[in-house]
View 1 (cartoon, one colour):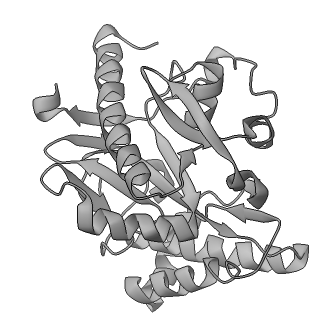
View 2 (cartoon, rainbow, N blue to C red):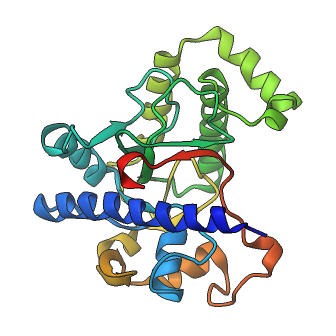
Length: 271
């Protein structure tokens, strides 16, 4: 059960997330970059016309080609006095998705509290890459991605205290001693983008590799009401959300309504 202060923080956090998302969406629209609401944000738009009541983050997604264009546009036109762009180019950031962070704010999460990276309030931008159609090739592909992904985040200082006590964490930490971060990142990027020039049925976000989406779903988008504004989302949201959540219009029981663990939130001037 959340206390009153926590509820107030979540309300403020959502307002800041909307500020960031609106600026990102305007940049995408201005430069014809095709994006859509991702995962729980798309579910929130469909089921609640805004944030899921117990949710406290916001995500966008795009195909890899659009994502690469987005990074170029951000490098040129993102307001650097207001935002920072966190990508795999940062030495201690191990992931293949980007964070748009609001400067002079701070949000510390359990998983990333010891990572030597900026910790501004953020929204995530997920690139989707093609998966091989062959089940056997795909299995090998996903195993390689899993190994590289886990070596990188353990090597870059991520992980909860509980995770760091596990055998799996210690094993990947050990494996990370045999290659530097840049080499591992290059190997992983080469792997996950390998099939992007081939027409395949499915694609995935490599940091959440169990969620397969159909490439055809990305071809058509439409605007969805989200709080007091609108964002683009996949037109076939029904197929998309069923693939992720099953009976997505069914409200889950209280024990499954999970928020992120925040050790600290500093809203700066946005308080």
